[in-house]
Every structure is written in structure tokens, then in C-alpha cells.
Length: 79
Image 1 (cartoon, rainbow, N blue to C red):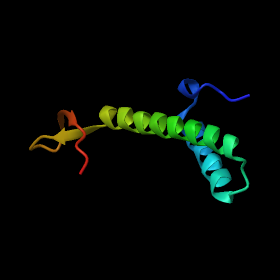
Image 2 (image 1 turned 60 degrees about the horizontal axis):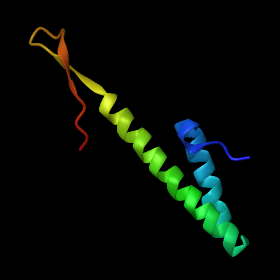
Image 3 (image 1 turned 135 degrees about the vertical axis):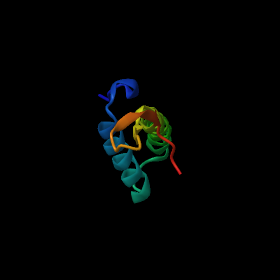
Image 4 (image 1 turned 120 degrees about the vertical axis):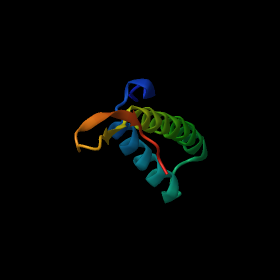
């Protein structure tokens, strides 16, 4: 029985997504099963992306003052 995507950890979701991709790439999956796997894989991909976005938003960079001591934090800026 498949676990609800919303309750999966990022790591579990990524592992399942990798398994789905492997099964789809094998070409041995019947069409109906391939469609079901594709739909679940798409939902897992979105969930993992959402979890990464949330994690990135929580990362903060420490600003140092002129004396080298922490002076506060600032939001993480990727790029």
C-alpha cells in the first residue's frame, strides 16, 4: 500500500520517485500501470520541490559586524 505523499519525508519521497523513474525507464510496465506511476511520480516531484523551497526559505545567513561578531541574520538568497 502506498503511503500518502503529504506524510512522506523528503528523503522517502525522493527514493520513491527514483524507483518510479527506474520502472518507467525499463519499458516493462504495462500502460495503465505506467500512467498511474507517472501521475504519482509527478505528485512526488512537486512535493519534493515544495519541501526544498520551504527548506531554502528557512535557511538564514549570519551577518557579521565590523568586530567579527554575529550582528544578526538575513534571509538566504540563492544565486
